Image 1 (cartoon, rainbow, N blue to C red):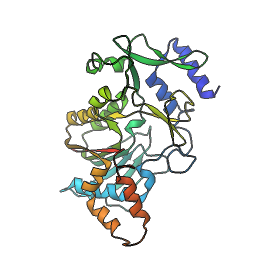
Image 2 (cartoon, rainbow, N blue to C red):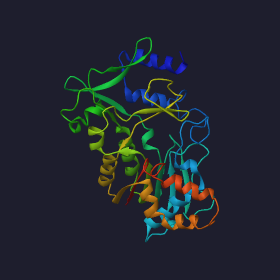
Image 3 (cartoon, one colour):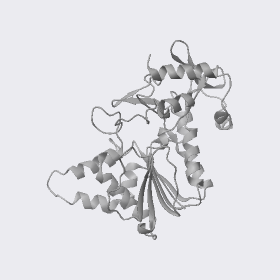
Image 4 (cartoon, one colour):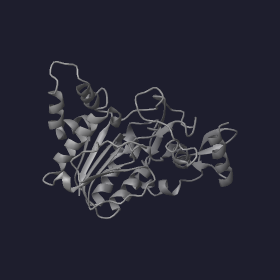
Length: 324
C-alpha cells in the first residue's frame, strides 16, 4: 500500500464516513506531501517521463501567437499599459520571454497570493481543468453523489446525501435521464474564476485556454462522464489508482464560466476553438512565421500546424476571451 493511499484511508477513518469525490481529487492533486501538483517533478512535456503536454509545451511560437492575439484584442488600448498575469504556470516556467510588449509580466504559481494591477491581461492555460470535481450517477430515478470509502482498498460508493456544493446547483440537474448516467461537475472551476474576477475591479483582457463542454453536452452526450487520469501520456479511467502519481481531470463547463464573466461585468465574451482563435486573432504572427523560410523545412511552421490543425491541438482545446 502506498503512503498516499494509507493517508487517504486515515482521512476516511477520521471522517467516520466516505469522503466526497471532490475531496479525494483535492487530496490527490494538492495534498502538501503527496499531491500530484505539489511533487517536485516534471509533469508537462513531450518526453517519456512526463504525463501530458499542452500548448505551452510547444515553446516560443505559442507565446508569439498569444501576444499577437492579446495586442489585437486590446485595441484601441496599448499593451504597454497592461500587466500580463500568467496564472497557474508550472514551476520555473512562463510563456513570455524577458523582452515583451507589456508593462510588466508576472507568473503566479498555484497557491500563491495574487494582486491584480488595475490594468491586467489575465492568461491561463489548462488551469481550470486542474481543479477538484464532484461525481454524480443517476441511480434508481435519482441523482446520487459518488464518494470514496476504504474497504481494504479505495472504492467508489454512493453518498447518503448530496454535498453542499452539489446541493446548491441541484436545480440545474435533469429531472430524468438514463439509468447509470455519470456526470462530472467542475464546480470548483467556476468558483475559482469567480474569485479571480471579483478580486478588485481590475480592467483589461481575459484569455483562458482549456478544454470543456457546454452544459447541454455534459447532460446529453457524455453518459460515462468526462473524468479521466493521465500517466506517462496514457489516458485511463482508473481514477483511484496511484493517487498523487497521475493527473486527474474533467472537462470544465463553458456555460458556467461565461455566466461568471457576465455577472462580473465582462463584455465581448467569446468562445472559440484554439484553431479559430489563432487564425482570427493572431493572423499577423502566423503569416510572419510561415513566410520566414520559404521552401525549407521549418520547425516554427511545424509548430503552428501542431497548434491549429484540427487533428492535433486545434479542436481539442478552446479559448475563452473577454474584456472589462
